[in-house]
Image 1 (tube, rainbow, N blue to C red):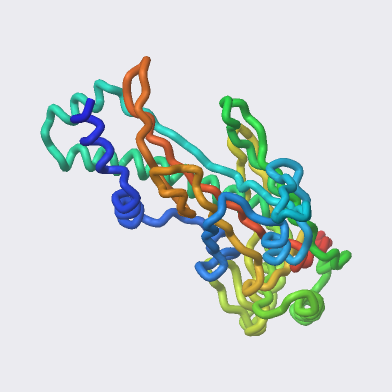
Image 2: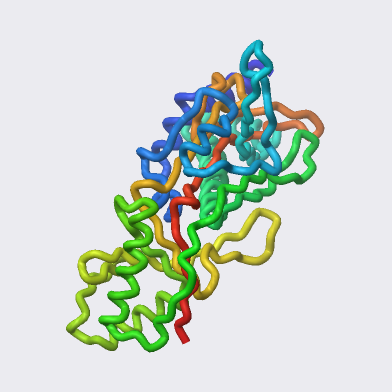
Length: 328
């Protein structure tokens, strides 16, 4: 017992897990990177968030359908609403036979490689789930399936608000000049909400129409093409909103923007990604984007390696604008 637990446990200290994760290649998380750069990510020493913290991050009062409750914060009976973040807990199983074979080999590098692969698998699952949740949050509401303590499926729900309605517009017959007029109108409206770094995200059909107009203008179009989209007239940063997400247990993909929609936002004021303290003594109850630990099991004998993360992607949807655009 001591031998195999000691052999396995040494790969799952906080520092050992951190070293493995640091050495892993970065996964592609375009929405998390766009909305939550390093300065917009906050680690909380508490396992909860207060309603006021989320409100301050998104500029509106969120509505909690699940995961929220009121607790007394002093002897006067005054209460504050707290939000319990969604806990992501993927796991993988290493059988007793697998462990026996690894230990019998006496090859420390082989054991390390196997543990690294298992940690990488769990890290990838947590990061992918975080990216999916962020894409869903961009729409204004999180409703993410999770397992409860009894293994049943429930959901973490959080209403983050709605974008400002910028009504409707048409670029069906627009030329380059008309396109500039339309973009400037949207730019001005977004700047009135929050305008440090105005960005435009266009649904696929709207983006295609803008491309058609730009290309039809030939060499006169002041455009710089970027991996994410284009910059027009040196001012308007346009992103394609063709991204989709598929929730765990779901079979169909959901677009982050429906056809005909344009979302404007301030890239310098998009909210915060909160990481809260883990309910894990081996992690020393610390707020970490990811942690993994071994849990020894019987019947069948082996080790369940459990990953964990507690996140809330608090997207500041109420500081964004949205318009319905006719393109054909």
